[in-house]
Length: 278
Image (tube, rainbow, N blue to C red; front, top):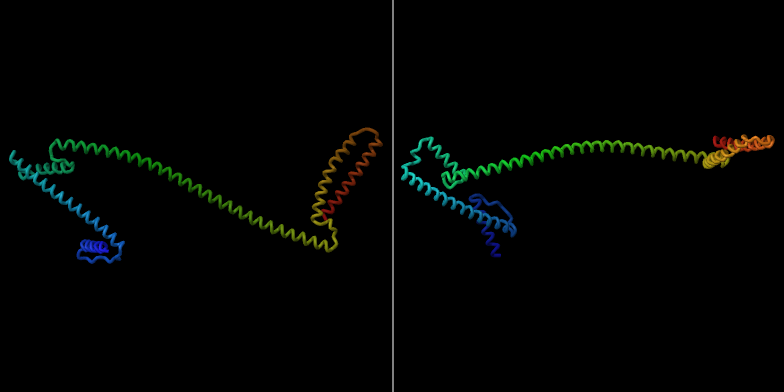
């Protein structure tokens, strides 16, 4: 409990330090929010300490650089009686350019021994950068090519999709039409079946022979087709008799018998056909 109260106090002090004279935003004080804010305050404290150390280090380096500059300036004055204040405007520009170059190249001094390695390193970096740029260009060209191919493929797929949708719409219309026709045919078939049943009932009530019903007529039609099939060998047999030249009287008898049999079959066929037409 004491640890929780200590964390809340640290959080309150940290928030007051951050916001200063401004009011601290309202927040729900509980174990979770206190823990989160305490964690943030600790991280902020560590960061502030690191920043402070960096600032102190930079101040120390600046002081050292300033001392070194004063030392070099005194040596320059002692050796050649030279001071930057005595330089012309052109000389000052050159000196500033030399200093800026040393800062940009991050050399320890402005000597030629320091500049040459720094320039070499910069040149190497430049070549590496150019090589990297070429690789990036090649990769970019490859990506553009793949993108173009992908866009073309996407366009083809969209066209195929449109064709498929159009074909599907057409087929769906055909199927709907067939379904409507099927429903119509079913309705008509049922209507005809009902009409046939009604007609048969009416005819039966009027004393019509049952042999003239629809089923009977269908059976007679099948029997007629069978009889026609049976007459084919009889006709061939009759033709074989006609080709013979034996006893004329016997042949005449056979011919008359075959004719009578054929007439009987044809009469029966005619009768059946007439019954079917009725």
